[in-house]
Length: 523
Image 1 (cartoon, one colour):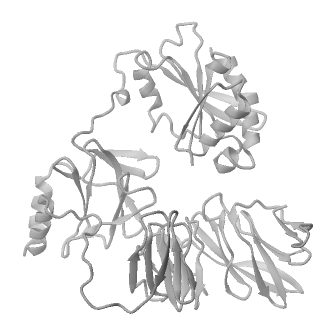
Image 2 (cartoon, one colour):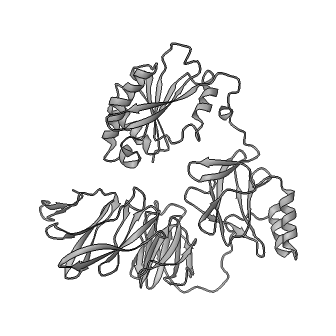
Image 3 (cartoon, helix red, strand yellow):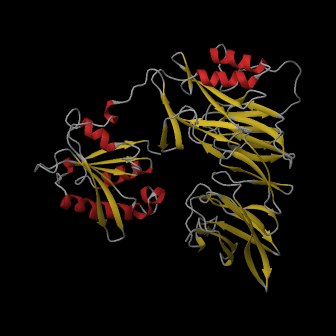
């Protein structure tokens, strides 16, 4: 059962209801008709319950997906009997609950793709829903679901409504205030409060805002703007006193901007434009209203607006980088169109940014172990079919050089949640180079995504099912099919992300079977 009621004086359980699974959702109490409904929000269903008995009054299958949108949130009431929920990674649904033939019935009134891809659930005010599509703030007409506007500012944050105003603290610590309007986001007050991550909305009491980051708390009083000049600071992405900054000044003042811009583009053989040993100028030219940049130097899920030179199609963003940095990045035009850098020929299918561009600073050198071995001995990647009691999987196994012509037995490393180990991680290329130099011959095995993979398989309710298939079936299968060292000293577990938990879990639960462990970037 997914939800239970308990007596507050004794702790005795009164009732349990619903068979759905739950992650970060919360329920709510709403009056619909003459009754109060306890509305349970699960991963797959929205259910109305009798507060006293737990009896189900109505149910709506919202078909949620295993994403931030579906596994977090709270039913948002837009009027009596009308509740909005995020149910998919790419959207949400407005559910209408009404009385028909003396029974409550729940039906979808409208759906949207304009709020989703976020843990943050929207807020309702005066006929409008304000929420996020990723990091983009969006306003919807709550009656029709029509999108009224969207805004890059103030950035990914946590909204609330105070006195007809949106008050948003961004995850990067900026407090922003704007009217809760149908006409767009027009910021009237802003204050950078923290340099730390923020993960909870502001609170309001006695005329003051209380805001906290992961390490600090602040009390903010809203007062009339004082006279005097505002403090002037250099915007992100602008580095003054450089040759590029001088060019921008010249371009801004030029009568024939296009000729000067064309000349600049022709004179620079590589993009981004590298100045000195520590500065990279990212440049985009084209027909767009807005361009943003994201990449290794900015952060996953963060889009920084690029600056436009008025009267031109030139957008730019400058960054100080380490001498030996190698950076993956991409652009987004007009809030939705992702694109590589058309002036940079180096492209890669990256793990976090999708199809992207990359470049190296002057001190960066291609790591030797990522260079193909050439005429030297190389290993072989074998793709074998593994049939378990639950499913059939294709398992990638790297066999070291000379495996086929020898009789030696080799240690095995099992890789959990190791996505695209060969095509992106170049595991085979690296081992071809390293084996015989700094690494002994090994057999890496990419463990399939048992029990559906993801959080539930590695950490949550399905982890024992995953462990059972891995320990009782996959390891014996590999030992039977390949020449492995079949002792604990010959087996190691590696995990990245959620797979780090599974590597630790299966190793600690089976110490006589698995003797080594390595964990990288565990969530």
